[in-house]
Length: 94
Image (tube, rainbow, N blue to C red; front, side, top):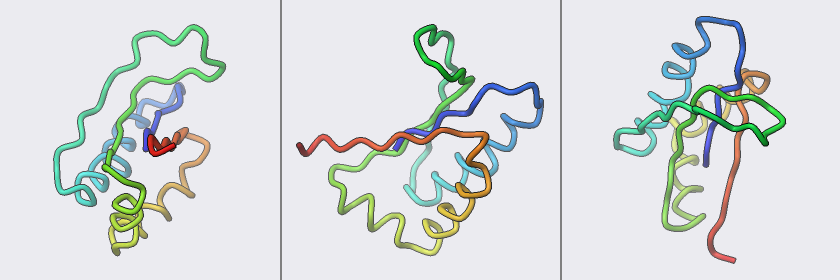
């Protein structure tokens, strides 16, 4: 799963991204989640400033991570911030 922070004029957006997305993802994954700064995405319709991602080897592993109490809380958080972030899910098992 990749989470992109939508570009806004709100100075608190990055801090909220770290607090409400990156830190909980680190708890879910049990490891450090790096945050990348988007330096250019001219072809993208939406503008983004940062992104992070969490990876697992299989979809079942991802489902297990998000079935935990931390994962369920994270899912609720996503619903509160849908206008500020964009999520992409990918599955390489095709």
